[in-house]
Structure formats: structure tokens, C-alpha cells
Length: 326
Image (cartoon, rainbow, N blue to C red; front, side, top):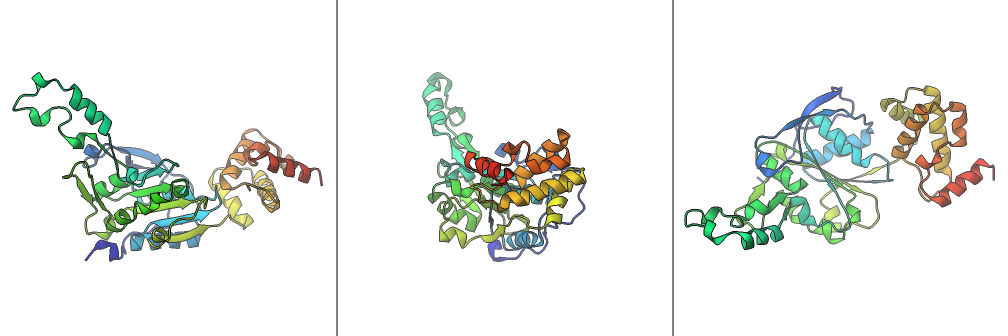
């Protein structure tokens, strides 16, 4: 039976698990020749406070072998979930940061045809003997193939090791980008067209399927065929004061008065009609700077160093009017 349709009942992400401050994890971005004997590196635990709903959605995606599609406000913590899951499960994290020029195939592999052509043209004929003809530069197309993040995860599964794959801000790419990945996401297999003997596939073992997390800032609609293949979750900005203060505490903001004042200001700012409401990432940057600069908590309501929170001039003018009491 195809592993795509079997449940992975052994792997679960536990948001409350006690994790070591650092641990050895396989290096993700390595040459394909290192996939069988990978280097390791020490990774530091990054605090992440997931909601119960987000934990449930993550485990549903893992169990079904489906990509987890996360939508929500920028800065709400979508991207960092992939880091948290990879660390918690002690898996390498393959990261694909999508641009407007990204192609679906880039996640699987790239092929340097220009370099191969150059090598073929510059190979000295006198060096190509009958016995070395198969080894001379340009003769082996596999030399010019570089696996992408999803490609490495699929290839790594062939060595009985799992990966987490982050496809970040998929909506930045052309509409064809997610459509070009439909077959590979279903089959978890691909072949290199330029080198017919290069084929990679995840074995028929549910516990080896890559854990794929996709983020979407809703800049454009995603095709229905892609959505049908995903588990969906909307990451909402925390509305509970205690939850926000817990997040600040997890990120080593020790001044309780400063935490309380900063959270109060953030909630007030998000009530304003701003074009770009400050999110968690802005809050963390702002409060860390306030703490390092020894800003008095009583002065926080004046929104000092507002450039860390407010990112558009029109919004800064609205905040200035709000502070002036208009």
C-alpha cells in the first residue's frame, strides 16, 4: 500500500515537551554525496509557544503525510514553527525561502547546463583517451545536478532519515509554482530529467515522509488543487495578555513591569486603524531593545523607538496623533 495513504502514528510534536538547551542535529544543506554520511552540528533550542490548536494541526499533517499550510498575519510565528518542530523531533530543517523568480523545480533540483557546456567545450581532446572518455569533464550529467531543499529531504529518506521542510511565503511566487509541485507532493518522488538514471523516492514507510510546513501571507490566492493537498491552519495573533507575557518571558525578557507595559502598548496599537499592525517579531525586537537600553517601564506608553514596531510613515503619523490625544 502506498505510504501516502497510511497514518504515521509514531511521530508527534509535543508543545509542552521538556527539551535540552542544545542538541546535535544533522546539517541540512549538504551536497548529495554527504546524505549517506551527514555532518552534525550543535543547535540551540529556540523558545516557541504553540497553541493547542496549532499543535493539533501539526500532528494531523504529520499523521496524514500532508503539507501543513499556515496562514496569518506576518510576524505571528508561522515560520518559526518549522524550527520548533525540527528541534523537538531532532530532525534536519531544509529551508526554501520563496521569491518571485522561484520555480517549483528549484525545490527539487537545479541543473547547471551552462557549466556542463563549458566543460564539454574546454575539455582537451588529447586528454580524452579511449579509457577515460567516460570520465572526462562534461560526460556525466549528474555532476551538474544540485538537489534543492525538498529534493534533499526526499533523497535523505532513501537513507532512512526524516527531514522537516519549510517552504516560506509561497504566495510570493508565480501562481504556477504550487501547481508545479502537485505530482511530487503526492508521490514524494522525482527524477532528474537531464540525467535519466537519477531517481529519488521516499520509501514506503510513513515514518520517513518529510514533514512539510508551508507559510502563506495571503498576497495572492493559492490554486484549489494545491489547497486540496494541504492541512490548513490560521495562526491568529494572541489576544490573551498572559500568553503574550509568557512569550516575552520565554524569550528572556525578565523585567515584568516592562513586559506588562509593552504588551499594553501593543494591544492599543493593534486597535488603531494601521496599515501594518505590529506582530510578535516586532514586539520581541522592540522589547529586547527597550530592556537593553534600560528604558523606564513608565515611559513605554510613549512608544519610544517606535521604528521597531511601526513600519510605514502613514502609520507613524496615526500613532503620533494617537499619542497627542487626537
